[in-house]
Image (cartoon, rainbow, N blue to C red; front, side):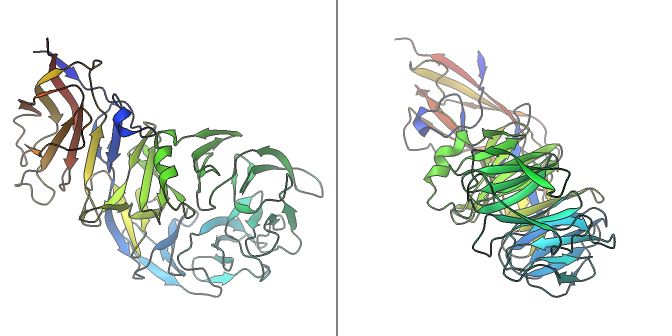
Amino acid sequence: MTLTKLKLKTPYRNVDEVSISDNLFKLQDLSRDEIGAVAYRPGLETFLDLGTNEAVDGFHWFDFYGKGVAVSDGRVFVISDRFGTFSEISGTGTLAKGVRCTFAEQYDGSNNLLLYIANGADLIYTDLSTYAKHPDWTHSRKASHIAAFRQRLLTNDTGSARRDLWYATAAGDAQDFTTGDSFSAESQPDDILALNTSNDRIFLYGRARIEVWANVTGAIPFRPETVISSGIFSGDSLVDIDGVNFYVNDRREVTALKQYTTTNLSLPIDRDIQALSYVDDVRIDRVTSVQGKNWILANFPTSQRTFAYNLLTQEWEDWGFYAGATYGRYLGQNYIFSKKWGLNLIGSRRNGKIYKISNSVYQDDGEAIRGQMTTGNIDHGTVNLKRCRMLRVTVKRGTGKTGDTGTAPKMYLQYRDDRESLWSNNIELDLGILGDRNAYEAEIYGLGMYRSRQWRITFADNADLQLVELSEDVTEVKR
């Protein structure tokens, strides 16, 4: 017997499925680690319920105070401790409902560190006891994006006819726009859909290009430094992780901008993204510091798709919420990491809940995660007919189901041959009750002949999945 380990390269779907051989085709709600083992992606467990029954539109960790700030249904909430204690604060000014928020921390003229919040309605600020509309923000202006930079508060303006304008407060007082400055995108007129600061530079994201501005001494505090020939598709499709800006560009590509160099990350799934019927509402989220793993999430709300890029393995995964028959988009949006509490938290897109994200949680808000791994059309380097004597599945056993350790989780295996459309019946693998560790390697015999074979593994139980490898005893049929 000669066993051949199936060496499955990174998931790739930018060609027709029948063309794929050595690559995985899809990891649905599953994730590979750096040595290739497959597990559930992190699950979601309720941390608290804000009681709005609406999406969480914004979430910010205010490190100075060691508290979280959440926005849902136009209301502002402060989360005080690791046990989920929270309170709603009130004030003047209005935030839009169902619109993503941006946040910035900056000092006012009395050296009070305040949190500013914007999402296209009023620009508001808070000291976490109450909130108020910014006292020096013209009524006609509407900021979707704000940022702190060099003792100033920066904003774009989506409410006026000149949407290429952006504003900076006076240095040392984020409450003072009157003696601050205004600027325009200079390379050519271009709506500023988003702005942020990174690596001591200001980045202005237009539909056709990105302008980078730098701080200078003199009467005019900033000057344009360079222009990057890449526009942003949606203002919500922007997130910064450790000085790298991720966004969806004007060609619908998920892009990494490091310093002034852009890289298309989404080539393996560009075919999927281009096929979506509606992408105008695309948004990028992040999930970071989950046991050393970081992801960016490309969410397409109308199209009900979420693509997750694993920054450690540089692989694309599909994340979703399984609703009995079909996958919708991922349940979470707007992430924070609380350094003080050591918690990864994310808001709900549907019901005002805040979730804990954890690799030891195997459900989403009490609902099953349905993980599925689909390979390419494996041919072992030859199109000749082959006989599969046996498939060995190396997988963790003996955990039982969470909360029901006396019941064994089940894994299901299917295959289809020679690029046909129909899958085989399910082959059930029993993964053992708690303590049943008799065999980590399941061997399946009598699997017939093929020229190429595609495998599909499905796992949906509330249990720890660790699929280590697949190995096949296969021999070429001699004529």
